[in-house]
Image (cartoon, rainbow, N blue to C red; front, top):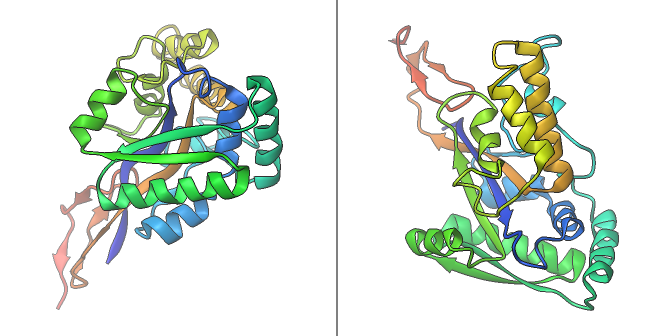
Length: 261
């Protein structure tokens, strides 16, 4: 059995047209109450890795230092597990919203793995924050229809990338993107993406910094809550040697493969 990267990020998105989930303090409290290490090792159990920003490993390297994009894009206390700070932020959010108690619905797909993830998050938010969470598990098309119409508060979902570049995930958070179903809207974010795809497109260092700025802005705003970098478990014949697996999405290159005696 071999664990391979899947080129996909799992995350929660929020309906920012809803008064409660539009509160950035509340969203950050939610993020810090989730133990991503436990989520990946005890719930997914397929080699998936905790996500620290809205991108995955091996998409892009810093052209000057060689550091992975996900390392440079991290913002402290945005995707960490910090239940003490999470509780403080939750209490602050309650005051900002004029509430003594908050109940939210987490919408998700009704397959077993996703429901287990949703229940893990439900338990974490209830025990660490005192936030009441109702899980609404729906068939995928029904869920997608509700989300696209804005009939949700929080949604557990994922995004698969076609090629290895952070723009693949970051672009969906621009204000005009059809996949931005939470309606996150930031001029700073939009401008960073526009520069990366426009004036700085051919300048590797400048484009890299544009993408870093966008990623850090999204995390500071908690535009979405990244949860895990998806992996898949695949059976591999130990006699087949020389197969090269893509570090970004796990695709196999058999050009140098051979069967050992």
